[in-house]
Image (cartoon, rainbow over all chains, first blue to last red; front, side, top):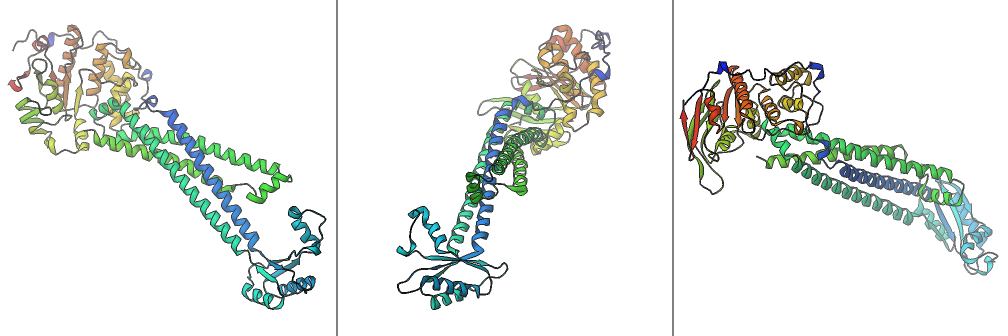
Length: 325
Length: 219
């Protein structure tokens, strides 16, 4: 083994460089270790935004339906109807008065109002036309019985009394309609949960694919990080930070859109109050407002989507890192 | 510090590229790892860096059996080793300063703690004017020095360099060698893989020579 010259005679490593850079001029280490541009940021943020918007729309719609159904149930449940059918050889007016008296005498009844002959004619007018003489037709008469709050009458006893004392009188406690509305509201909730589950599944799959793509693109960076002693936990944290921010960005856009949508709907409803369309909508959907709880639910979904994005990416990153030795 | 005993390596079902390799690397030592192209220098370095598992034999690193180390355990041991790759492996989106400070960021240190240290090292290797430059605009020599600075910034006990003078002119090669000697004098054990005979002739040091899959040690 030969040695041409001693170390001492060799030039100093960098003696011709002027090492005078002031400390303050050194750039700070602010660049993220995983570059933002290597992650399909915009498209993923758009997917999360759309998914959050759909989730918020579903939640709002379900809340509107449940709220409206609850209002309907309360309205319908607060009154019952006695129907008195005309029978040959009987005085219908006397039967109506008697049925109304029986109802009035029942504990738990707040008010009783029998529809007059004219009011009954108005009820069937949309189907049979105006100027009709009810004397020619066996149109039943209705008695609306309003119930006192906090006390439920004995409908069985009332039904039996009416059957015994007024021929052709029947009691309708609207139970059939209430059950149907309850079923409809329950179906809407189940369908909403189903849609939310699908939205979450699509979000998880989109984030998984995007994370895998980002990991493949950044494989050289991951290798260098391993070489400088980074643990898998550190590397996963670098990716998770990006995806959490992306999730928040997308969620905020989508959730903001949904809040704007419901706010605009509420404003339009307020503006249309008094018009025929507005009144129809109000009758169907109440105030058309998701309320404070609705907006809070949407904001919760924004946070939820960001968390789902971050956790999904972390899970994918950990799995990918575990497969890299 | 490092002990290889009867280590063998084969890729897939192919022949053994390294056979019965037995040697040790002591602390504060300096050695060249040499041999013809394709002799297995990079493979041996990768095993010393725990990024390649041997097919047989025992590797002991800092009194740990490399075969039984967990992934996080390997990461922890790698923090005691600095490596300079032939192709530098710098991150193109980070500045020279950020590339050099990367091992310290990984260690969880705050920038205010390591900033003076990184600036001082960059000045020492003559990159004081290039701190804010991205690797794509650096010359080969500047990239090489950046890679070396990154390898030594965390004060490793062992420095592995794979063909550090392969991409530079003889003058720069001599300067880099001087840099490694200075690092060795400050207490870092150094292994330089090279087939540059002229470079090895510049400095009298232990030589590990790979030939036909076997390692011959010349103290």
